[in-house]
Length: 116
Image (cartoon, rainbow, N blue to C red; front, side, top):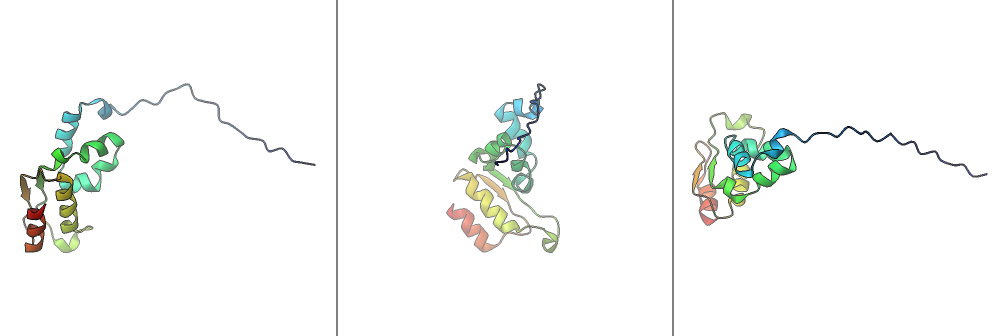
């Protein structure tokens, strides 16, 4: 005798989940807000919030000005600032006009930036 498997289904909720309010903001307003966070915060967290923010964070215009100055102890950082900086420079896709790598910039990093 074959056994019949019972599939239990949850009743579909008639209540729609509302989209977060920041999804409705114009793209340029979202970019302005995200740019105020700084490169490290964008790379480490903001781009992971939602697909809209990720899309804005990948726009080369977001990376025309990069501020990554480090005011803390390099040994206490949970990430490598030079690798993050290279990633930010790559995202600029040649549109970089200003960068701050105070306290951690090296000659090799400057060479990398100038070649991009």
